[in-house]
Image 1 (cartoon, rainbow, N blue to C red):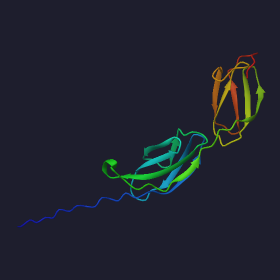
Image 2 (tube, rainbow, N blue to C red; image 1 turned 90 degrees about the vertical axis):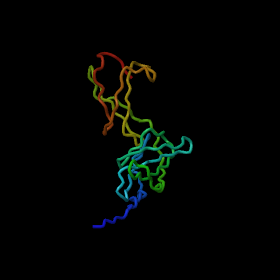
Image 3 (cartoon, helix red, strand yellow; image 1 turned 135 degrees about the horizontal axis):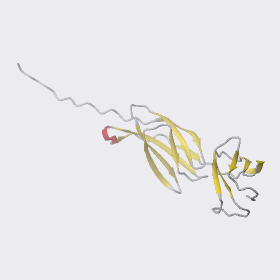
Image 4 (cartoon, one colour; image 1 turned 90 degrees about the horizontal axis):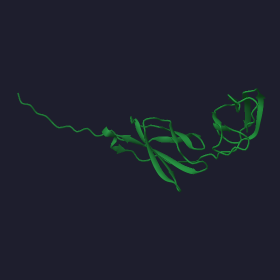
Length: 173
């Protein structure tokens, strides 16, 4: 019998540009973005850029994607592209750019001490911005920043924190 054969080369799967890039949330030091994949890709490159700071890129297999380490009160742009192929050597075009401004950290107001016991005090405050976490520092009267004897991170709503383990009959700020 006679054998015949042909060499067949398949075309690579195209690398499609992600669509509908959008902001989910913006923080004082970051943002969360998401997009709609168009193909079967499972890796992306997210580019964040700022005129003063420059550009930096992240590779990720996750979307939504959280961008951390940004500066408060700065204008940024973000774009995403798909990474395709074996070894991720191919990339799609960049998506449309979405611009955003990180929020400023606003000082809290109406700081008040509520329930006080010998070793514990409830501290509350009013939030004046979009912050979601606070560092509450306390120390002896007239302490300077970095000289506190204790600090706690608060992630609460209502905006209050119980400071426990205090020394009886001691003044604190």
